[in-house]
Length: 339
Image (cartoon, rainbow, N blue to C red; front, top):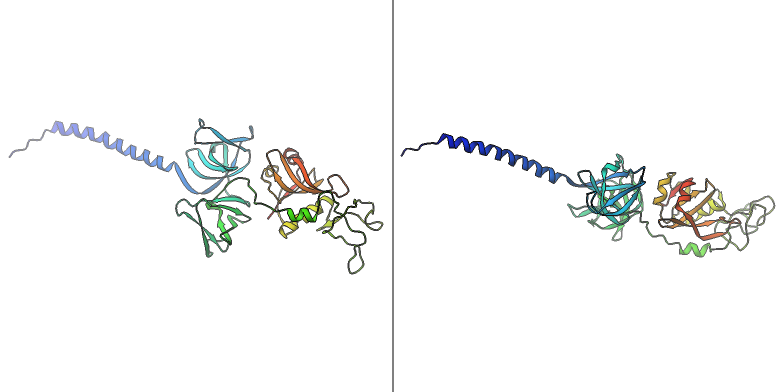
């Protein structure tokens, strides 16, 4: 049998196959690019950068045509857990959406703070709770993906939290901040101990074992205090005091210590005005250009609500303090974060 090859046809087929192979190759590259454009990994911190408008829009989808679901203040630190091109997926105030990374600055050394986080372990499904703040420490519990956790202390990139009766440390690189949600703080006992409307003043004649007049920071009276020896002997201040501070500062230090067992002077400090937006219950603030101190009870979009002393003079205790966020920012001296 004789087989005759048609060389012309073979050449035509080869010429057709070559662009087909090139097209397939290009399609494969495009597919890989598409797959790699959405990357889920350990959270990377970004800082919202909107110096003109002061607001960074969070959108439902990674597109400027998508609906705006939240507005994030300039300079807010965010955990971005997924990227698609120039868009990053993040959470803010209980909403999850997309921000333009063209309007955000990557934080090379993330700074984590206490607050509410969500376990982010989409691959393994489990976030390890370890005995100590190190990857070499023993695992004492496995926390399911998406579990909401209250982180009460931070050591580097590790957060201390509790789960199923066990307290340990989780890697915050595998957790997502859920927003400025504070851990609940119970002030009921302190409201009873230091009633609204009474005065945080010395009880006349309190003396220590050596006969010196001393402050009893656990007392409050119905008698107004002053610097005119109204409650103590001549020449002594009638204000109550705690940890070397008197009046509003001393009272705030006292409340902070009652809440945590730790002196407020040793709490982590910030002087950044933008951090006022992150205040939570139990935090200490000093503002009015170093003129007043208080402990935060709660915060909404407009006001900060506090417990304070001596706001109107005479060391009166006030559980209904209310101050505009803008005024606190403008006159801020310092914040001390409740541990």
